[in-house]
Image (tube, rainbow, N blue to C red):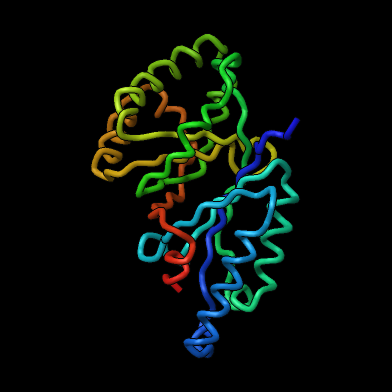
Length: 222
C-alpha cells in the first residue's frame, strides 16, 4: 500500500543579482534543467506559483508534497545545485502535514478538492493563543463550529487546506486557500474576522498571495 503524501512545504524563492550575468541562452537552458529535475523526480508532487510584486523578496514559489519530509528536502537540495539554483535564494518556507481535525477526528483530511487548481493561492502561517489551548474542549469546538459555518458559505468559490505544524515549524498551522476571485476571498476574510475565534488568534502573518501557473511560466518571473 502506498504511503499517503502527508507532508507539504511551501518554498519561496528570490534570485541573486548575479543571475543577470547569464546570457539569455544560458538562462533559458538553466530554467529547462531546473524544470526537468522536478518533472522526473518520483515521489514528490509539485505546483508552481508566481509571487513577484505580491511579497518582497519572492519571485516564485513551489508547493512540494511527499510521503516523507526528506523527499522534499532532497529535491530542494538538488534544485539548489543546478545551474539556475546557484543563482536562487530560499527566502521563506512553510512546512506542515495533513491530518484529521481534532474537532472532527473521524473525518479524513479533504485533499481531493485540492487537485483542482485555481488561479490564485493565498497561504499563511497561523498560531492560536495560549488561552485558547487552555479552554475546555467543548467550548473550543463550539467556537470552531461557528468559524467553519462562515467558511462553508463561501465554499462554492473558495477551497481551503489546513496543514498542521505543531512542533515541526515556528507556527501551529499553515492555512491555504484557492480561488479564482480575490474579491470573494477578501469578503470571506472580512466575514471570518467577525467570528468569536478571531479573539484567540496570536499570529497569522506573513500572508503570501500567489498566482498558479505552469513552472515554465513561473520561472519567467526571474
